[in-house]
Image (tube, rainbow, N blue to C red):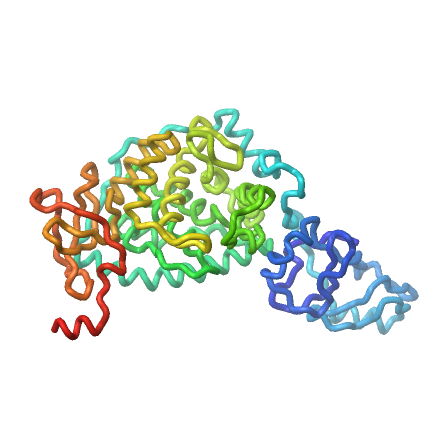
Length: 466
């Protein structure tokens, strides 16, 4: 028996060989059309890996040799049975149809934490290298000077039009991300330039107007796709805040890639755990705490090796007060862009629904972050930049004003977090495109946040009003 490497699995096509679990039990027969979800759902059984009978090297086959296993072609069709004594005709047939494909020498099989090994002690070569760099103070913990970048602002009507255009970009990017995730989970390398290209439109949006990325965030998610949508939300938010902090284009892009894939390791956590609507057991929670380590393993195996991106993927669940995971580092040992991505990841998660809870209002999520900042979970300088981008009543959310009208927040006012720029909503809940800067109209103020259902009016109501 030999362990099967991830790149040998032809997802979506018939298996060319039998697959076995670590105990020698048959998992899937040759000819079965394998899908990635089958590996996820059988995670416990396959913890030790996937195996197949040792294959004969075609170059070593000779006349008179007796086959030790069945021989199939690339489509899983049986060519010769186990026990067949080879002759010249057999060899010609095998060499003609079964052309071997050499495997890359640096490909490693997917591995998971062995049962019983504490999450705090589990490591891979990649996580060990990053830990050593952190402990040797090999990272720059300083944040850039705020306000270095010139922040462009679009007219409100142009901003709202751009939001609509970017909805199509979002759908395309989500589909591309889903394909990346499938390839990475299967152990296939991806071109890092393709990952950069996925973010190009989003990066341009961040530089065009800091409010545009926040207007693009998706908050209505399906149960199966929330990790994909969440990844795009976190990348958008992270890059917007990084620009506000004064980071340059290269750092912003590397942060975006790390934020985009910082939860890719969750796809190696069993589906019934990551989508659970019940409290997790200690063993299940330990598996969740290991997913940043799975992320690093997946990123490096897929060809994403920029140090900043790896740190973001590895440390975005750490917290400044050492309450995070997987290593419980405090602020002295967490990359600043990892701290930033940790903040935006937490915010995005709170405003998105999950299988076990509904979404929070954006205002509630921000107040939760402010409360946690008082308990030193987040870097205050990063939180201030985050508020400069979102405001206390976040961009994209709806509010009630002191004159009784409803409005949608379309821009923050840095340093004046309770007085954003809003556009009034008409009787159908649609933005009018007019601009009301609450920082310049002290007679108006936000009274309370509104949920979307409080401003949406059904068609019948619109007709009767007309």
